[in-house]
Image (cartoon, rainbow, N blue to C red; front, side, top):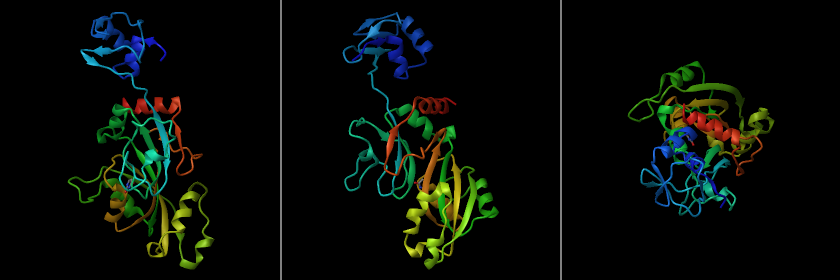
Length: 274
Ligand code: URA
């Protein structure tokens, strides 16, 4: 493996910013192969040398970040004895130590970040960081101001505490007479969703459904489904569109994945340090 400067090695491994790790090195807190090294420019070979900070080994792990457009029917886990997992959708060359940042239900589609960057994942999922997650959904019936206010005020969904304020925007209402479904004209940015929704069990399709956008800051189990249940409605289709600064790439078909760009990784790191 290519040699790199000791300060870059430590900064890459999130030991601190470049100037912070320079200070750590100058103070004698860093050893390379058990010898104290005080010069940040010293070159190290990540495959051969043992770098320690305050006596704790800092291995060099290449961090990876992937965006997946999760399709329905796969589970957000790294392994599962019965079900196909989201990891099975990444190319074989991708690392085996990746994990999904948060969970989407088996029947939920959309943006899922996969990484091996534990601190970043932790920060993005922390309710205290308030990272917005935006979802599009098709719900039974027609929500209005009453439901918008209920979402904004916090809902009792059977947990110890009410949900944090959430935003509910109504994008459109459609009629679904059983034999007139073919006449439905999907909104341009929602066509993929309507595809699956038309195939849904007829019992699940009442006379009228609505397309909505929901913004939440938490990630509780079945949160959006339970929020709609709390206002007497059902979620028929759910797709995550964004998480903090990261937006689902419209060119990714369900089941497709790509590495994040450098700009996307930078934007996530800024959200992490907010
Ligand atoms: N809320 C849900 O109910 N399900 C998801 O998959 C994500 C958010």
